Length: 108
Image (tube, rainbow, N blue to C red; front, side, top):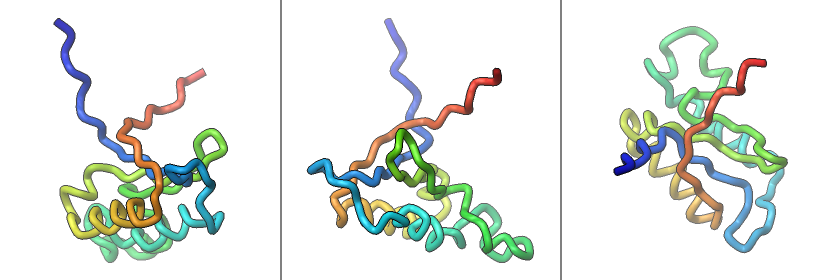
């Protein structure tokens, strides 16, 4: 008997609508992650200048030429309202959401 896969640790919000259209504006992922930058381990004021970077729980990226935001499950555990905001953003804009686990690049 094969064990079920472990639950995903990340959710990928892709910049593609369910109809297959590219979501606009082109910097949507950076904007969304910027709004979420205050939600982080230890809070926004845990160290000077930390508010200038993205939260490790909500990071913009590009995968295969598609803008995405990687949202980590820790956000839901620590800031449920922030998690709801991000998921509602995806739903309201008809964006594709995929449960996944981002693997580190293979050392080569």
